[in-house]
Amino acid sequence: MGNGVQEQRASLTQGEVLPLASSSQTESSHEGLMQTRSVLNWLFSGALAGAVAKTAVAPLDRTKIIFQVSSARFSVKEALKLIYRTYLKDGFFSLWRGNSATMVRVIPYAAIQFCAHEQYKGLLGGYYGFQGKALPPFPRFCAGSMAGATAAMLTYPLDMVRARMAVTPKEMYSNILHVFVRISREEGLKTLYRGFTPTMMGVVPYAGLSFFTYETLKKLHAEHSGRPQPYSYERLAFGACAGLISQSASYPLDVVRRRMQTAGVTGHTYGTILGTMREIVSEEGMIRGLFKGLSMNWIKGPMAVGISFTTFDLTQILLRKLHEMGYTN
View (cartoon, one colour):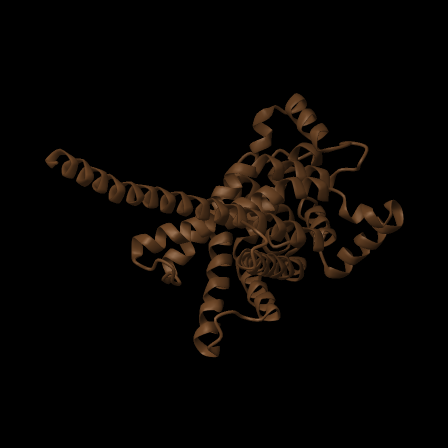
């Protein structure tokens, strides 16, 4: 009989322990599933945000690059004339030439950047004790800078290809793969990373200021309005301010990057960042050279960044609502 009691206790003990182990495993599995879903949501929202924003401003972006890599004097009037001449000569859709290469670059770039930003926010929030809350100013800037640098490092050759397609006639490069093949064969694989250093030097302040400004304006809005979420037009305005500030601060390095990227097809030989800057300033002057096309960027940049941030936020809200309604697992 004693043995029977012991067996019953053993059985009882097992009956109590097994559900606890099973519950722990289920909870761990659920957390992993939630994290995976969050990452996939960030990647999808970021990819969509980048694609929508860049497609919306593609004609302005292409025009800006053409002026950046030439010695022609820039003005808004001349830019509009160039857009009109391109339309008359090659048709309406030629204004989006190179946009396929842009999409190949910007979709992974934006997906990685927005996803990395959310991850870095979580890591820095945990480190500084602000998990789930708005980060202090310096970590807020660092999260954006690191996100931009991560995305730029992983997608740089695609940016190089896109710049080449934007400034060359369609007879020179038939498609994205053709650009890779010709550059590798005629100029060497190292050419695919020409301009990488000024890109990284520019993306740190650009992405840092961009995310910092947008997140700060949202935080201030929530504190003063009492509404946790701004309206769509307010998001667009916050993103526009972020784009204006960040692109103005990093613009000279963007000009240097474009000159180095397109040196193989414009007849110049740019070796270093300082050498490229000196040549641009000596030939075209400080303002007309290093800030060429900035006024176009003041139109294009705020539009693109505003659309990008707004699209990301609204897609995140939509995905959360769909999940709550049971349309997604």
